[in-house]
Image 1: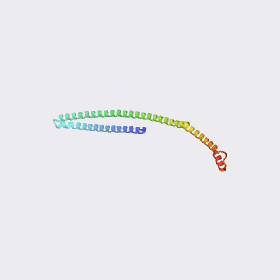
Image 2: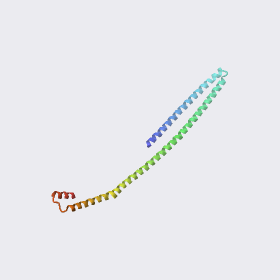
Image 3: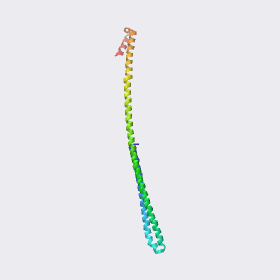
Image 4: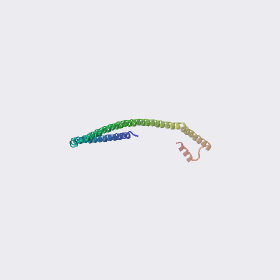
Length: 176
């Protein structure tokens, strides 16, 4: 995986977590506003209820109890959201370490592969040079000597000078 791809994956993860944080912040702000509005409505309603209903006190106590319970639940939700954010941050740190480790390992492996390939190419080159020097050159020399001996035997067997002028010219052209 290339560095650009790793950076894009990490950027995507950071963007997703940022969007999640923003959504949680908006939800918590909305809940805060709703609780604040509900508290204001209850505070406005409380004097009227006490004036008109003798049993309003019990109703107001119940409303206050509900409001307190809502505040506790909001506090719990806030705590849980903070825990989720902490866990997300830890996970992103782990992912970052993992990606860094994977990048380092991949780079090391690529360096090793390059060294092995360079060594293999050098060995093949040396083998070809040794093959050329050790086998092909002696074969060419032996072939040259054999051709010379063959020409010499052919000349000895044929004997004397050639009678034909064309043949003499052809023989001279061979040596030129």
